[in-house]
Length: 227
Length: 227
DNA sequence: ACAAAAGTGTTGACGTTACACCCATGA
DNA sequence: TCATGGGTGTAACGTCAACACTTTTGT
Image 1 (cartoon, each protein chain N blue to C red):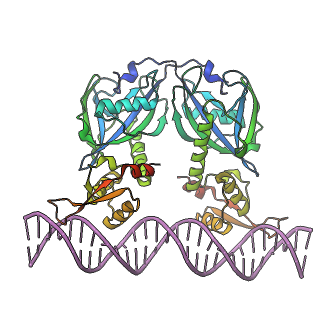
Image 2 (image 1 turned 90 degrees about the vertical axis):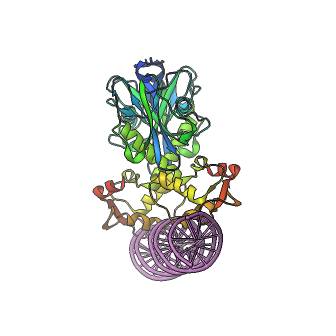
Image 3 (image 1 turned 90 degrees about the horizontal axis):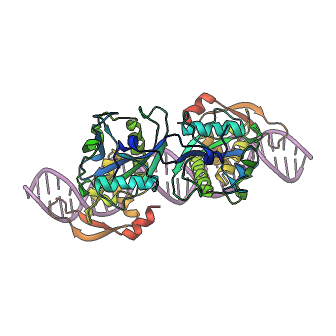
């Protein structure tokens, strides 16, 4: 049996397609959404799936995922996070497809995604109104969502979703939408401010009762917290 | 550009080899070790690497990793944990190899690994005396080791390394060797016992000063703690 | 003035760390 | 008997959740 390390060199490739699927999460003031695309052809014609693409010879899986982001939502320099690799024999009905899942977090308004080629629709779907998904993408998305929440709990990776200056209330709403749970206003405030990457602009947001203070991020210090 | 999800079906495979590399960690009373194999042929002839193998057409990556375990250390039914997938263009000097890394935790005495085919040596290498590794396996191993420690901190996955009955001291030594840090005897005791999957056999281990009590695991209850 | 939202501080529960004593065993 | 290791309890600490009051602003 060829199970030693060298066998990789002598083994032919078996028509296995390697793809990257990406759970692109978006937040724009209301609820957390994920970008879904609808297939216009078989298999799974008419089904919504996560956007994905085959890894090209000259690119890494991270490149593939990054290209999805720039093509679909026109964002650059948004960090992607690897979730896992799925190699079940039955996950694709036609051929063997091994996929690595990534997630990213963007502001949907950056770009209005357009359908193309084998897809006839694109939508920002609220996470609490997901349709049936094709392939095993229900699992992929669930895993990616868990990974997103876990990441957010451990590091402040959602501040690029906020405008240049924002209130703590707005920051809290981002957190609550992503984590899908309510947070205590005062505890959230204390925790976030203890990270010391928020700067009080000494200005107040007009037109809002209470006169909330506006904050902006110290990008350099924020970077330190993103491991 | 073929970046939509359907393109995976129409894209030819590009002679990309998909492999599973496995960091097989072993513990047998002294230090934490990892199973390394030495390559007898180029590339990286003479270098130690993690055991790995090409994914076969009929198997998943988990199957590939599982086969490594049964072939090299003759263990079955040991859980494997996916660490990550590495697709850098330069990680293999000869051809394109994308690898998914797994780790497993076994008792080395289960089997004395033998060299075969393109490998001329196999060893259980203490984690604190690692040689230079071929390919990018230094990175793979470091990531796998971090994943192992993280897993152990969150769930008790090391009790299958212990004999049927054991003292808390022995259990603590397993933890300390894996985590590479010293633990407080009383705190460790309280924490482990609070999980309530350990049963005091009411017997004492003979030949040891202090007369330590022997424990055994309640397999059913332990399962509940492994998520 | 009044309602709604923002700013602030305190308390208790919990988990973790640090540490000291007594008891059991082998030499 | 004595040295070594095992069994047990407790105080200090930090983190986090829960909560009430005052201040600011819009209507």
